[in-house]
Image (tube, rainbow, N blue to C red):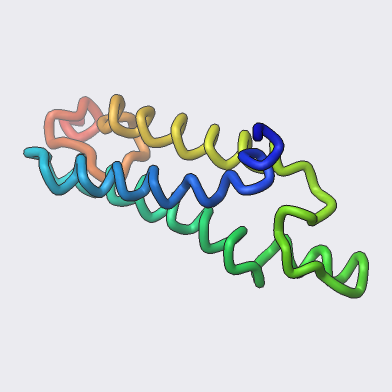
Length: 119
């Protein structure tokens, strides 16, 4: 059972995106919060698209390396556990970071109370 989940982790990303979309629709959010939740939703839809309807980076790499690509993504010769971990790690670590620290220098939505703007 666990091997099947690991081989098809990208299908779970659709449910995560739907859950984030529901949270987004049902909550009272500021503009910045809505953008961050929407980006998390779109990122999970992208995970599903990239692995569920291949034709992107992974497909191209396999096509160049092997000359042919198996249509079943679960049988591709790559470590799907590391792909799952790497994608989810990025999505779930980067979004709360930007949500928690929106006023860090370099952020696209700095407030006028930023010490850099007083100078």
